[in-house]
Image 1 (cartoon, one colour):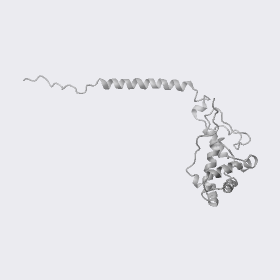
Image 2 (cartoon, rainbow, N blue to C red; image 1 turned 180 degrees about the horizontal axis):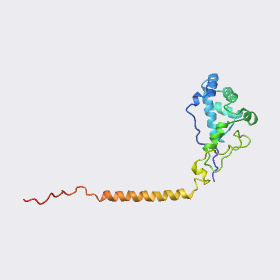
Image 3 (cartoon, one colour; image 1 turned 60 degrees about the vertical axis):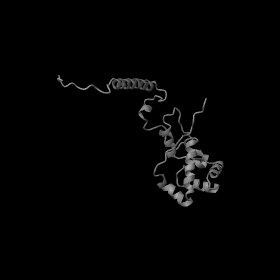
Image 4 (cartoon, rainbow, N blue to C red; image 1 turned 90 degrees about the vertical axis):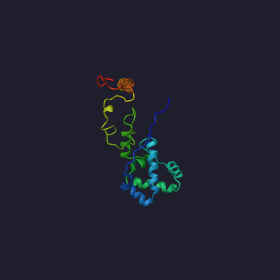
Length: 192
């Protein structure tokens, strides 16, 4: 049996991301490579555990190996700047060597709200008490039913499919019964 995936297949990136004050400040100090480092960090963060990434020396080495013109020291400097400016939580980095933020955790919970199991480790949680669940669940999730298992949805779609097929069949029969060349209309008795 397969293991349930913890991370995400995608992460949202705001169109104003490049205009964020923190991103611009770090890019001004470290150059364009800072943006690339940040995108790599976010990709690892969301694809791995989904809401954090362990940023130890091995992580920095691996990241710098994947980036063509960025060395290990640059990666460490960029991470320190993002921590200093508050993009990632510095207390959790100092204590556990992880990169995460309240926004990342909120986004993770929003994306995984339909999963039967989504949680954030209490030691790493930055969200206020009671905010670790969705504040505005969608209408299907609000019923408490697991969307993937709900028998009502399958029944409704089967009925809908049957009605649709019946309508299409009737339309087809009407089209088949139409005479391609109707006879000329008789205008009355004509003498020859």
